[in-house]
Image (cartoon, rainbow over all chains, first blue to last red; front, side, top):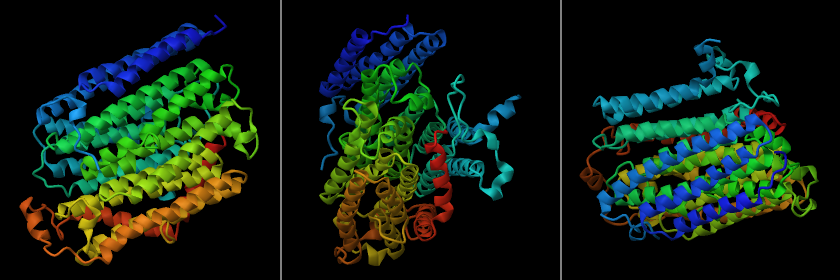
Length: 106
Length: 528
């Protein structure tokens, strides 16, 4: 396919990103916040898959799909670190509510 | 080609990786002493630094060169799209990153050796350094962002590595949330650029920046990347997290974050945004001369606005701070604004000036936070007022701190003056509206003199608070193992090296300035 009509698909992934960022900004529970981060990351992965599927040449398509796979791995790594911080926070302060952890204010 | 030939160019990265693995393996084997981890981390970063300097062409080290002369500043062929490319500017940045990591590793030896978590600290420090080294050789957008993530993920944990102090855990949590958000924005921007340009190769994107078939897609992509990378580089309006994180993290980690990992974002800005800026510059010295939605001018004006905002907001808020670490955090934010001027102006001298400003910032900020760590270990409180009279009680430490603050303010005979001089004169040479960027920068420098001066007055001229039980408080926390006047040989050595370097480069900058200028002009001319 030589012509690219990205508007609809970019709008879809843009909406996904918007939902994720809205969640990151409004959620107070750290675990729900991690889920919101995942949703937002998936928007980027979806874009890569989409642009790869409509790529004019094969090597480009393969590179886009490989990037998507790498990003899935990256997202898992990031969440693993997030969960480690949740656990440490729960042990130290007995809460995973972001709004209750506010010692650093001037 | 055998494996050794293939691996040789990556010798600095491999040394740092081996150091990190060694620290973690020793942890599993039960060797958890602070001195062991510190020695491994210092040695690994020092060896890697020597290798990088040798590759840069420093003549006395020609024997340990791992990179053939033909591998540096080589433009990758159009068909080949390698993930990495060795540029002399990248090697300069690798050197700067390694300096920061070495100084932090050395100074951390001054922490109490009974403290738990030393292997985690040094292992993560080396992993973060590895990510920084990879950023400096990246020639692919995804490789670049993943290398930044390696650094980020290691530093999220580094901030909270003590696992007990609720303040540093809170800092780790905030850092993680903001970092995850920013990497998401960066990857989303990268995916849009992939769609617009059909490649993720940075040099291909740079060459085609202004002549893209899908300008709206490209513009959105650059916009998301500006936001994502600005978080990492602590640029206004994406800076708010930095103050809390630098404040809550252990001071050595703050030194590494402010002096080291932040510069990763700077090099990423050079790699990603020089293309559009050069397209804007092709239209003349006036960034507003292009068509209204041309990618180049829009990107350039956005960068200029962010740079001016960052300088001004950082400086004004620094004026209002009462705590030393928060004041240093805001001053670090404003310094990021000066550095961003380099890519905004987009000439070879401006890139050189920004790189020199990065070097200055590595020395000054790492040094300042290390002094804060040392002074805190003497039992002095976090407020600027708590430092009253320190000049009389700790003259050497206070003079070193004064040198760092004077350099931050840009006083002559310090490296901070040289870097600002090179940067602002590049802005003036670029003419047109760029001169105004220099004017804003100079006004901001003048503003910053106020709060640095206030701190110096507090330290040297205000009388000490009456009951100053310095020794007793330090003793209560357990005497440091390598006590030399209470702050430890290691810390004293790191702070001393920084103070000497600030003055030495300030008086005789040519040995450092020359290589940086030639590296910057290679990079600017379209290399890597």
